[in-house]
Length: 368
Image (cartoon, rainbow, N blue to C red; front, side, top):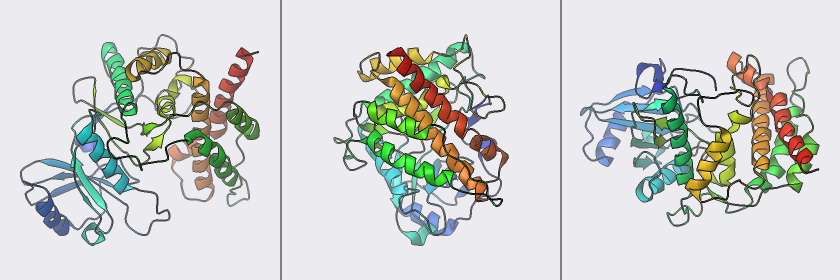
């Protein structure tokens, strides 16, 4: 993430010019029968966010705002992807039973006759989306408060007893890292073998086998909570989180995976012309340090500080991110992604993997 002016959800710069088609008449009839006080006619716009699951801004005749998320049109290649039903389930459980900042959900529709694919409607949160981890557009004190609020939201989420709110089947109750240690190298090897039209292979992650052996030998102690992946909406004027959105990739997993994902930029070295802002070598930051944020997280979540073997979680985040970036490179090779932004991300997969290995090397040397 780089420097950017925050976007306010609902403002003109949050919508695409031409939205995907929706049967407005059927949707109006359905919502009138399901949401108390809902009144037609309905105005619909599509957000630039949520392109995996198309996301729409709804305004009814009472000028009340809603958000609709649906599966994309057409036949889905992966039946487990675009899990709208899972998103509704976790949001419903959290909004009714916890103080985790999430929007209220109104209705889940699994009837394909209405909009062609399942969808749900939830509360609209008017707030700001920051793509800049430094919060550069804000006064310094507010930048710090935004980070503290983000950490507080994550600690609240990880402190939820997911079984007690009906989410015991939301994911596997153990072995989060062990499963990924087994599966991600296989995915990476397939991606590495992908060839472009000229016969050039994407190529492997550097030192992959060595890295995987270290992960197997140094795996962090198992733990479980609801994990999210991180997409937060901040109050329109105040430095605090008012909602955690985009739950498509959420599951039951290791809480330190979430924390390391949130703090990854602090461990990234800056690469010229990179779309990812590296903070590792930046001095005199106007935001709290990674160590300060980890300490606050531990206080809020009741976890031991310093966190034992946290280097594993950070290094693994780099490895997983490298696999994701390598996947973008594979899609480019297959002519399935061509934007300049995608190419910039794809070119980083080897550097990202090596940054993870630098953490491993430093950890090994510190124990000698």
